[in-house]
Image (cartoon, rainbow, N blue to C red; front, side, top):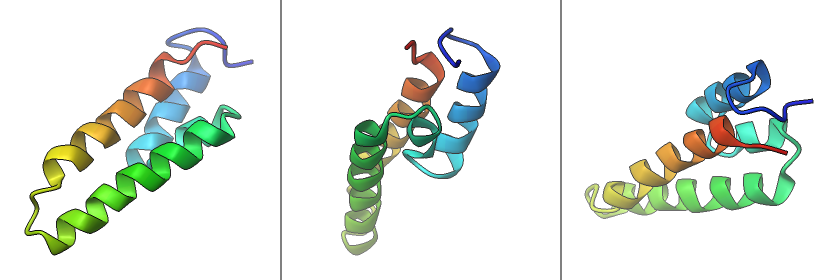
Length: 75
């Protein structure tokens, strides 16, 4: 289905992860990865909102990693 890197499915998954962390992994059927990316990324964003953005150093790379993971996934 979405097994090759660079396939249309992976591009769609990467775009979905750009807008909502973990959604791309969910589209690919990787439920555990989707939950972990979503929880960790948005927890870091949430903590950053209370710590004057210090945790953005963690949240932004996590979100980028989520997008790249969805784009490079091979079944």
